Length: 204
Image 1: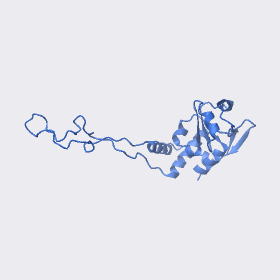
Image 2: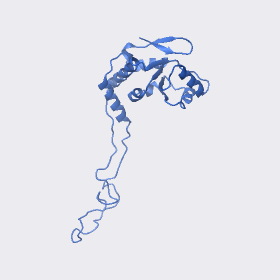
Image 3: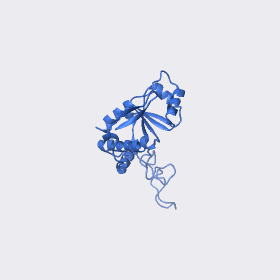
């Protein structure tokens, strides 16, 4: 299939793969990919001390009987101030496994749905001699791209520095594509070279 290339020079279009961008939307598969990505993003580093981890408390604070108080074996009991935590948090791995083929299929499904909803466009790769936010803002406004996620084949430092001060405009490379950032985007603009890389990745 063909998709229009938004360019300053003249009307152009590029060929994109039907097998990569012409799939049905698989909601359950996309949900699995989102859950897997978000779970893998969690640090899982929270940690608290149990009564065995807290320093001290080796001596029985007072005798077992005759004091009128509840019996106690250590001052580091979870019931005592300064004691350990009863159900202490421990470092854990939250990641959920998803097969590579399933993950790629989910990305194909998302891109296909973006194309159907006319939220996916192709743009020429802006070439800048130096960072200039004004030039990029003008370039985006010409094509009515106010809230957009731009995907490039590689990061051009001048382009990145020019875009970072524009609100609601983000730039990522093909390597940084994930289901969450695609689903959150109101519009996705992909350069021609990035389209080729995406096809090689998700059509493999």
